[in-house]
Image 1 (cartoon, rainbow, N blue to C red):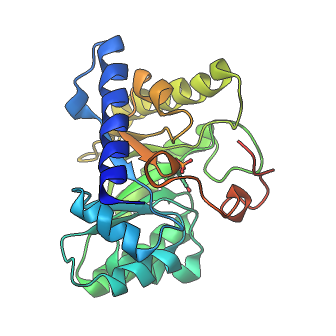
Image 2 (cartoon, protein in one colour):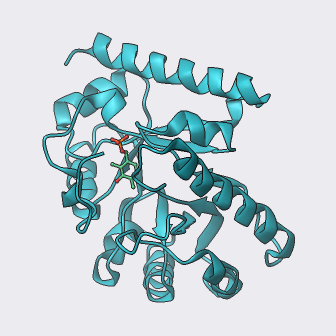
Amino acid sequence: MTLDDIRHNLAAIRDRIDRACARVGRDPASVRLLPVSKTVDLDRIRLAYEAGCRFLGENKVQEAMRKWEELQDLPDLKWSIIGHLQTNKAKYVARFAAEFQALDRLSVAEVLDRRLQQEGRQLDVLIQVNTSGEPSKYGLAPDDVAGFIRQLPAFSALRVRGLMTLAAFSADSDRVRSCFVQLRNLRDRLQQEAPDGMVLHELSMGMSGDFEIAVEEGATIVRIGQAIFGARALPDSHYWPQEPGAR
Ligand SMILES: *Cc1c(COP(=O)(O)O)cnc(C)c1O
């Protein structure tokens, strides 16, 4: 894969995002493209940096931390952790990540906040919501999010920015779309009753296979891996343990 390939893929995705925005009358500047570099080696990550990427998403914190350590010569490259986090690994996120999109438990919020206070850092966080109802998906049930959010002001190092979801893995685009609609409606509702000072603006939804639907339904962040870096050799079941894998 060459620099030109990556530039071409990024431009093609950006173009598709912009056209999805145009279909529904949205400002294209309101959608952030987050390239997802899981399983992507350092050479290709350097090419992505050369192509202008300054913020990369990784599902697994240890893989992200190894890359962060080995790319210290690119100090303005920031990392977003987008995968489920075990409490005992929260300390790594607190050390280097700029964003964490998969907050789904108070125990993780607690450890993150304590470690961030020690490091003198703050972290942007999104709350992961299970909109598909698939038991294999991580995230809070939609009905549990309001109560969860009310507890978060206690953790002053966490800057709560919005919600994240993975849609159903389905060829039925109506089913996929309904997950995105559900997340947007939930965000709109929570925004009304959010604790003082908390602005739940972000909707992180949409991946290589479904990001145009997500943009039509209001995504402010799309997380895109394979459409930029090519198909992954590792099956998705490595990242979603109970998933059948195929999309
Ligand atoms: C891998 C991953 C993505 C990107 O998936 P692609 O199919 O490569 O676009 C998005 N979100 C999460 C949580 C991921 O782990």
